[in-house]
Length: 293
Image (tube, rainbow, N blue to C red):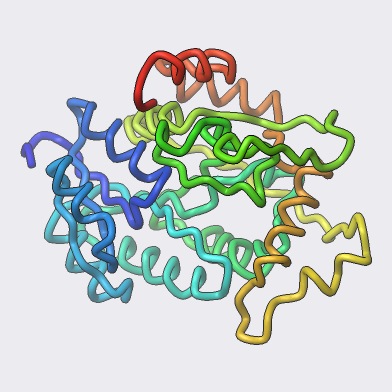
């Protein structure tokens, strides 16, 4: 690692995290390290010459890595749907508090319009919202939430993107040539290319100040009460596949994945003026010309 570059620590570089890693590597301003407790990605990390640090995601383990690498920012892509999200992210926050260098944190959200729908999908009420309260209650670690809406990469064949197919959740399955549109089909949605998210995160890491507007408190709204039993957590506290799918369906019908337009445009100008965000049609044309986007 080069001495004059900031070190960005990534917790869980699975799918979207790979795009962020690649764009950080392409920047002259940053080095990147990955925190992991699985060996599945080690071949990919080695091919990119990215240092991997094993961790059990306890505070002592995390703190040792942050201090050893002298990381300045910690970004999480740990997409957990049960209360282990709170346990692990609390350890991430505590490690940042105790670290001598790492005072900025982006926790794992990566969803849609949390200003209007902070508790959607429903499991966010017992995972993300309690941790957001922890973030609001402290002022030592600077934090922000990054929410790009749907990733446009889900329109692409799996061989073209880092994103893993989610045919049961996403309306279009380009690998199986199927489509299932929930709602009327007229509900607005937001789309961002995975690599453009990576480039935007790089610009955010460059920014000297992060501004976060507190989320409004809203009551949970049930559109279809007959889904209540399907949405209930399984006995072990983890979501059933049917429950998670029902929650995603509800979000699409409600338009929860459409990021607030005025705020999005304002922040694009302030933080991401150097990023050219590609539309879906451009992404599809590019995918027709190259092996991988």
